[in-house]
Each structure stands twice: as C-alpha cells, then as structure tokens.
Length: 253
Image (tube, rainbow, N blue to C red; front, side):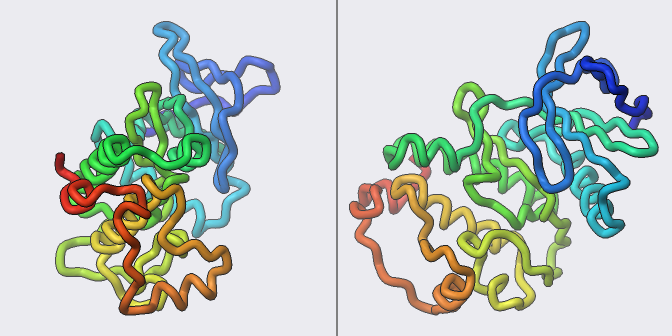
C-alpha cells in the first residue's frame, strides 16, 4: 500500500513513516539507499529514495513495474519489500535490510567456495527462482552482484529492475541483463523464454561459485556475444572447476 509522507527536510534526522533515516548504504541508478530504523521497535530496514523529477517517464514506469512485481513476492530468499511511501517528488521503498553485502564481493574476498557451500547457495537461488517462475515472474538479470547475503550468509535475490511478467506460452523480446550471464537467444536479440534465460544465468553462477570466475571471462561485449552464440562449448574438467564428480552430477545433496 502506498502512503503519503512529507517531503524530506534539511534537518539532520529525517523520517519516512515510522522510520528514522540514518547512514547511506548505497547509491543505484534510480536512487539513494539509506538505513532506516523504526522509532518504536528499532527494527532496521533499507529505504530506497527515488526522486521522480530526475527520472524519465520510461524509467519511472520501469520503477513502478519493479514495485508491482516485488509486491507479488514473499519468499525467504528474495529481498522483501514491506512498504511504499510517496509524495509529489519522492518514492520511498522500504526494503528488507541485509548486512552481508553482495555475493560477488564474498566470492572476491573468499575465492573458490567449497562444493558444500556452493551447493547451499545454489539451492537457495533455485528455490527463490522457482517461486518467482511459479508466479510468472522472470528476473532477467541474475548475477552475483544482484544476490545479497544476510547476517547468516543466506541468499537474498535482489534488483528486480529488469524483471518481467511472462504468462505461460508467451515469449519475451527485450534484451537485458549482463552479457556474461545472458543466454544465447538474448545475446542474438531473438525472442526468448524468460524462465529458461534465468536458468541459463543460474548455470553460469553455479560455474562461478567454486571456480571464482564466470564461464565467459572476456570483458568486452563483442567477444562475449561471439562466444555465447557458439553451439558447442569446451569441456572443463570437473575438478578444474572446483567440483567433484558427484557434486557436479547432482546438486540435491
């Protein structure tokens, strides 16, 4: 439910609904993210502040679509949206606060994960993705940078800015997401099944978890496009990728 809230004041302590705004947690393409603390319960949340006046109409529509999609999702491994406040100038998204940072940074810091830890992360990603797909939601931008970790190192799928609803039997057309994690159909600009595109991205992430690097390592987009279009890919020995044979055959246990 969207609620009205006063315009931000120049005072040091600002409020959004019952939340007191504190330090800045980050800054994205569409807005600033601040730590919010509930005035009564002291519960911490992340509040994304979006200035409507600085966004084009198309970007604003994209933000509103993201909000609508996130309201449909209630899953332990998806970053939760608990409330939305608004006034004439700003939108305030009250999001679940997680303190573990991005999975990407975790991989950079820790290096290769053990098969056990990689399997645990992957199960959580797949669980969240299965829930989304069962509600006709395709993420379309799955990558370690969009996978957050809570204080117990549990996955929280985040950033549904590229997400789309896809009814069964239909196809998507908009090419989006990171070339490193995009399926060949997306790279070629063809119509594609968003669910299958998400599964492809998950496969690339699974490769990266124990090996620390994506399956397609080139930084420039053109070589990635050419490599992604190939029908056959070189076989990487399982132990070279950091997976034992039983782990690679079956991620269920």
